[in-house]
Length: 485
Image 1 (cartoon, rainbow, N blue to C red):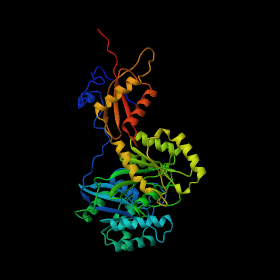
Image 2 (image 1 turned 45 degrees about the horizontal axis):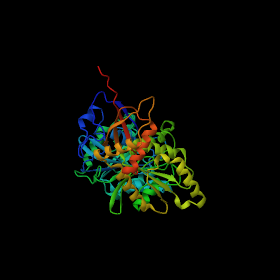
Image 3 (image 1 turned 30 degrees about the horizontal axis):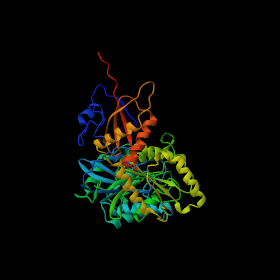
Image 4 (image 1 turned 90 degrees about the horizontal axis):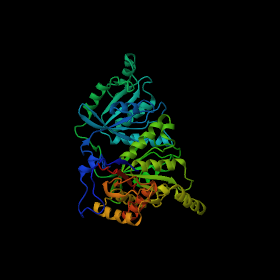
């Protein structure tokens, strides 16, 4: 990525003029409009223990809409079909100065089978791990046999329960809500999550049943954030479950099982990592519709919060347009990158020969990314993923001292000067690494550097200093020649 600005008469040093420990001043860079604070570091969240509230109920009663209303933004994926939410997804919320965590769950169904059974199991786990439960029903439908089954499960958890009679859009629905007293869970809270009706009173009552001290940290300190990306059904959720050693997220052979990004803390060889399982990117964002559109936006947001992206590719299938588009998105985001070729157990010798050709042809723009060949289904070589993550993070955080960088640039310019074009030969006056995460360099020059020469500089930077697993950005600051008066 190249940014070009005029120096507007600001004096900068020339190559070789700095001492061993001398740096270009922050004031000079700030005067040039380069934001030194925009370095990609993530602010640590506080470590206050917050109460956890599980939002449960049958499919399509409005749980995710209710969550969006409480947190004040359209974060949970919502569509007017049952079963859009499948995994447990946690959001931070606040009301009247009280902070808590909301866990949106998939619809709980009696005698569910297949993927629906996994969704129900995730919902039950959320109930058992929460400090309080919001049980959401559709007041226009009333209590069903399935709702009665949920009540039995809730009584077994012995957690405080707030009964939410949703879809009460006007006073005529109050009578429907009152019918839910029969469930024996106390007064139904008549609300309309779509319109916001009754939300204030409901949240006041929720705060009243929450414990003074919660059970979970909002954003635990320390773990590195890893986003799992790839097209649908490439094996992201299976890999997360394999790394965790248990069924953390719902897995099914149907493409698009994961919709919301799912954060999970996973301990591997004594180190805790925060993995984010994301929705498979099926189309360009502007071409997607319905919940796919919002799932794509949330995948992009999860990438922006991550430090490393693990892009899963199907080793047994030819590269697809979605694969290259996802890789381009990661590079543009500036995140570190690891390539994981999944389903390696399905490979044969002929496919392996074609794969090497595809890598040379289609992945040349990310040839710097570490590669691991794995099988999320069998666990083959998943132990090699962590060393690749460490390698990518090391490159992402590498900082080159200014004196060493300028010594390198001086040697580079002397042996390979920029070509003369139109009787002019631009020179590099000085260089500095302004930020890490990703490594970002500023070159102060007397003229614009051609794209081929910029790529040559980036390639030599990688040869000299490493930068495995990370994009490298080179910004230009061009000084126009001053006219003598």
